Length: 437
Image 1 (cartoon, rainbow, N blue to C red):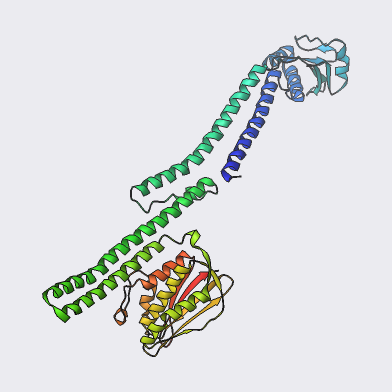
Image 2 (cartoon, rainbow, N blue to C red; image 1 turned 90 degrees about the horizontal axis):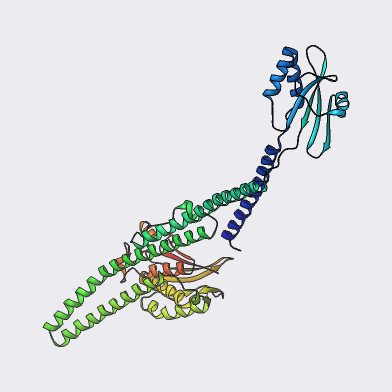
């Protein structure tokens, strides 16, 4: 059951409960008002007695007129003598009403006879006698109108608040989407709308994640395109020069120029292939490509493939770990990352050096480490080592385009892992590829 559904249901129940409670309260208030509420008869008795003591019957009658209420008749009795000009239909109940300090009789439903004793400053006991006639109950139509009006009011207020609480974040998502569609890649849903814990908040957060991902992709693609354009200029210029020289010469010299042109074409092909691979990796690793990968078999195969090139450069390549471990991911991409790590280590290793490959396993990840005995990397270059087309201060030692380690970093990210590089004391570089298990 969705959180938004529960929220709407909760407020619907709250609205109905509030409507019910307020309806009952107002109905009772209306009924009491129509029937008449009882005043404090003891206080009334004292006031009437005080008025009589102060001014006699005239003052008492004036007090009775001032406190006249619909359905209520009152007088003040001293024994059986009526002290006011008001005559009440009490009859045979009067003796009983004068016997007690406070008494009430109900001869029939709605009709009440009330007696309340009061003793004033003169010390004479007197009784306020009250006849309370049945009031007129409110008409059912009036109560129905009140209940309907109240229900409409409560439902309208709650509905307005609910509609506003849902419409505002949706409007914020729509505005962010409009800005994003118009080219503002930094457009996001405001935090106070994306922080709610319901489906609308989920929508806002999903939009922000999508927008951030697209912004990263577009920004990276633009950067890669600019860098590729820059990198292509040099080999294309050399190709143009070599072909021009080949036209002007002939024989063996032309063949030499063609060989060099073929070499430049190979470099161009490698550059374009790496740039395309980097571009594809920016979109992440599709779910269907995640398969169990036997790391030992994969690394052993890659080490064997690079042994010949390592031997030609006078470098020893050692696989130190033979522990079998399985990681989820793409064998092709992990293999490409291992290829780039080995290629990079061989390029920058000195003759007679050694490259070691090993991995460690813990509860959450497998860490593959490739160590070389080359010159290492200046500390200032380490944070930028995995940026596309970054070659650093040792670029003159080996050919390349600065994409190999960038591809390794994208492979790690696509698998939910990471890659780090540290200099080894005494010379060399260690690159660690961490893959979740």
